[in-house]
Image (tube, rainbow over all chains, first blue to last red; front, side, top):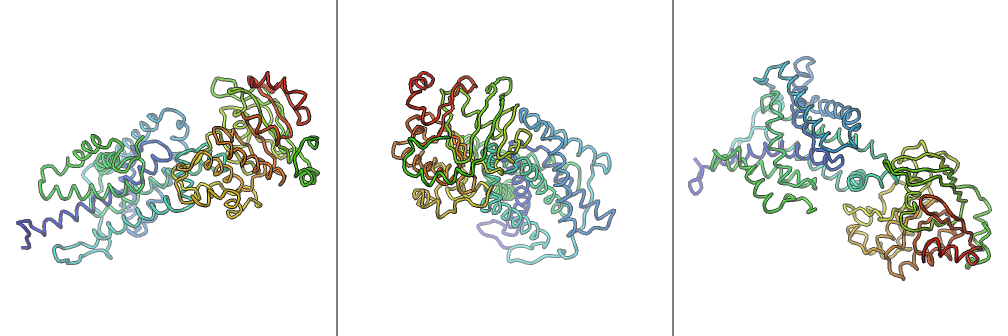
Length: 295
Length: 253
């Protein structure tokens, strides 16, 4: 057994990998939250439920229609995003001028309804989803065995996050988004249809959660609670990273996954609380978050 | 419209542009509200193509609100606002610009999350014959030098130039400018006066909200004086001398 200073390198790298995978999901989910918060100024409490919905839709697509993983990976985010567009247009927008607390409560209610609906339909024990045949097996690395599907999660998440970052920070469309976040009224004055951009942004931010849900289906059990469990952690991550930054949301997501993995190795008892501990420390030292702008 | 008496050089080139006169903006009985407060009480004004018209008045007289009402940026509007003959009261805010309107808000509205060039390129073209980027950088060399700086790191004067440049690039030919000289050094105010003169010569139509009467007087064709949400006086360029006392009373200068 490979050891270094008495540390079991197999176990350590194994936990690091688990951390990186969790981090991939954290990054996707907190990125979606950050994008939505940026433009709509609402905290989407339904983001976890949409992640759960994504996983269930992938499962249902396979079960009832024989739609395979790869097709689901494209179709499900579109479906979840489309659902979100309807929610924005018909539920969120009518109360957009009210206190943002109302839309927060609305999304929270939606999350509870979705979670209740799926508990009613499928119970809470969780359903299995097969790893797609193309990604079965794994690769043997010097210190660890890397299952192919887990490598795929990390790559897919990084590619999607990096592309989203690039579009927002480096393209004209992204400039519209950033400017619309700052001064929507002036953007309207320049002739840009801000309500349309807002709706599409909400759809995209939620579609990211749907995408994460499909990615998660083969590794986590597909269950109605999967969303609410992860969302609490993701909120902590968003607080740590700071609401202001797209890149910050991605980096913090990955970082916190790794921190969690390392803690699981060195002091497993603290692994489920370490992120909240980091949150407390960050809030004390830098209230706007690691990447947030001071108000 | 007879502004030939006191106009500086450039007048000769100005006349042909005006020969194709048409109403660019016609406002009739415009009322505007923010929530419960009734800000504009029945405004009437007409601006012809190629004219530079100012809105004078004290703070709170409703001048900025008039511009915002034209842009559909106030809570509620009643009455009529025709731009290029199109009734714009039913139009959503994002359609107004596409009638050829460029709006420069009092707070300038430079985006801090965008650099200078991104700010410049941000507004979509509303007409095809806007100034190209080279032309703009030639007109405002400071912006060229600082094109990769964060927009809000510029000095006040540079930000104002950027805010102007931004709408000139889109090809807007009706400009609504709110207090563009406010708080700026005299040398920059002079530069802005030159720019407005140049735009006038190109036949652009300009509605200028201005506090600085000495800036506005030599370049404007007409002045509307506002008080408590009403237009209380219209002064043509050639009447300025005769109505100086009246203006002083209204403006308290």
